[in-house]
Length: 509
Image (cartoon, rainbow, N blue to C red):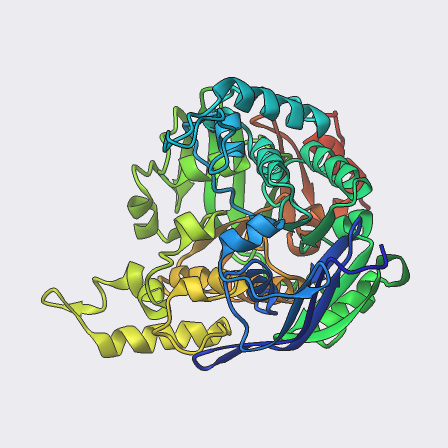
């Protein structure tokens, strides 16, 4: 544990107009889970890319296995024993688990030198893959096609792939962001097993409960600078937050006391066969209505069907005393309903387009004359909403893919708020963003409710539901299992309802 596997010292990295890293250092040791902590935009991704040979730093030194080194490519770093498990797995869906594990280094039959290509030993490939999976305690058949695996299983296969190349350092970037509590436990069991075998783990997560459970040591970055490091056993969550954001966050959930007005939308007995049944609720002006449930409860599916992404089989939607049925999201937008999806990168924003283009996209018709877009009006609109939501960027002309996750989410919010909706549906709006940006997004949500906007907040984070909503609809296996007013909130009751237990709301005087 004392000798460093990888040591980065005085690392600085510059991009045009941006100082991404400034005199950063970190030491990774064998058999240790090292948490890399910081807000989105703190420099974590840049540091990881330097560790793995994607970027070459402008200054500083890298020592690996006691020798100074400069990886020329990710392949060189991988061959040396440094592997990354990304938040979004990159695998060949139509190939088997074994083929994915040994892609690029397949076991081959030994052949005479005069034969230029050694044929793949398929028998050995599947045998080695099964042995590797079994040694890691994974009950996955190596013949299974990757497209038939769950998200958690794909992460496990990625780990097996890294270890098939004798990885000494495993970098895990938000590995639990899209998996269940049970799957997270299985992943952590595997991490502990790898740690016991001497593998070093660099663990990146915004979930403090995970960091305190799994990590031994931490390094904190802020604005591209090294802030501090130490034992996870000797630091508190408040201390880590202060290091991350440079200040204490006293109120992560800045819920205002908006005036609740008339009903904006009422849903009656919405059903989609095999997905959800008899879902009824109403949402008012100035109200933040929460939807809570465990994975597979059907919350997002209700929202998608309600606005016309997926077809409803039965049920009624009432707006302004008139029944309506939306055939597409465009239909619902015309009535003032906008939906901010959970997957901001695939569904919320066009990453290769600029910030200005993303914000103005739903308003193209209004910003155009005789079919020609008015660039001045477009920029004015984008600048107005980028300022309102405090989007941090070098300029509106930069692509959204250059932004941190939190700022991408702000761009998505800006895009839809520019359409002046009457009902805003937010599906996991703070998923995968850091604690400071999460607080900022919560403040935006609260301000919008204060301005009279009706908001539906779909979240799998119970503290967020309790902290930010006026009422909560709890779903279990496609049905509404309970509903609670804010003054009735109790974590135990809400969680029991989410698990399908019979719940009576607390009697309130």
